[in-house]
Length: 227
Image 1 (cartoon, one colour):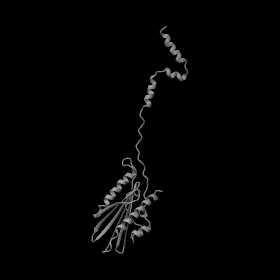
Image 2: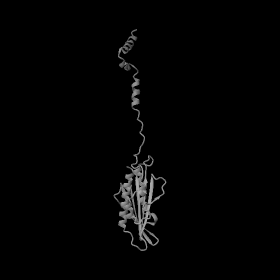
Image 3: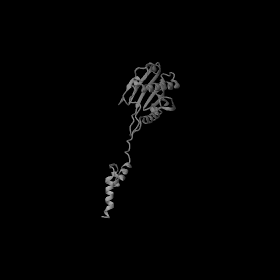
Image 4: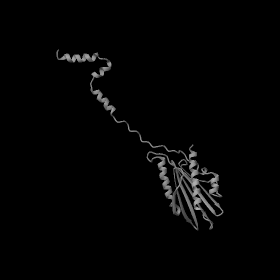
């Protein structure tokens, strides 16, 4: 009886305390289990990529005003332009204008390319940046181009100008390309000209100014199409 008395006293003491304190009389191991649960690592968040700014493209043949075409492609064969084939009009599109005013020939191609943000490819902006760089490189080598001269222009988020010359038969063509990026869309302007039958060649600076004006108008049309 003497040995069991202390144990009996502890049991009676636990039975007498309020319910809120009964847990203190239970097995002390449960507290350590709770601590282990609290210390478990949280779930790793799923990777994401910033969404593309522009969701659609303007109609290429409707992106320039009639006044612009009249000024830069005099006597245009089709003032509304000729839509060039595209597999997905929401991601790419192009339009062509050509005109012959006397012996002065002008050709204008306006192209758009849009990129969506993708986890495997990166943001639309980054993809567009890489594409714009590639387009500028190609402009300096296309169709037997020579004497390539590159520059920069304050159009959109970034723009590169590429001037080249190309001989076609007896005639020398001046080619001016402007590649401009606005967020996830790339605008490419190819503006070419020559003077047939020994007519005066186009002024290179005027050709550049015209191509830059076209690019600015096209970039504005992208913003308008996404309002």
